[in-house]
Image (tube, rainbow, N blue to C red; front, side, top):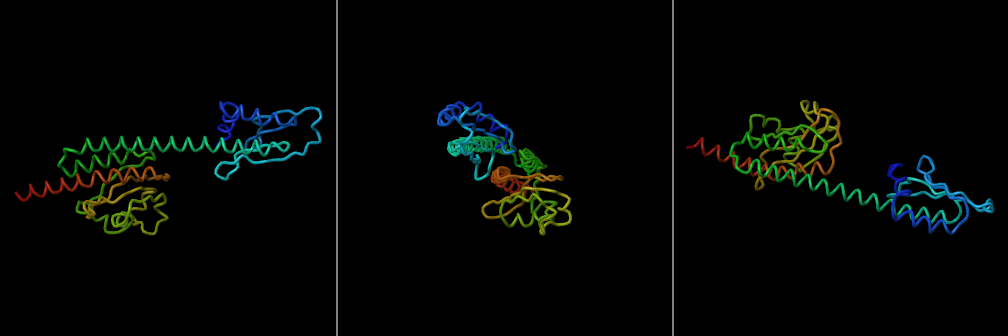
Length: 248
């Protein structure tokens, strides 16, 4: 939790203020609440007869990490505990909101992709649409599709993409530091990719790659896996259609 967020929690939250008032009513001594850098957020001055009260210092913690301090007499421990609980709740709420937003983006992406490729029977068109959707990841990057039987399928004979073709969806945020990367792949800084699978067959790889270092996240990986699950059968159907036209 950032200092500004802790300040807002202590000074503006509609539930935290009343709780602090109740706790501070138990002492007439000076109590100071500060952020991690020591900047005072709340400094309740004590009465004239509180100079001999023992002073304690307790951390305000979120997920085991200190985000601020409460300094004062014995009630400071209770104040720190209450603020730790409130700060953790706020952090959890933000995490849930972020997860909900990620899921909304994922569903929106899936709906758009389904509508775009649902009626296409051209392999290049389906691959292009799928790559465009992969380019919409929140973390950025350029989308790509490499088919095992396509003109650039040689890229899947080894390297990172070859490993992902035979494995599971994967994030590689430091391509140059990965021993599996081929010389050509080292021109990419970060990538996230998933195999294209149809009834057990692996027909290619889809993903997003960035020439500059980015930190792809689990939400990016989930989105790529979702795109792969929709694009793979559409690509297989388009390939089968093309093969039937060649045979007729």
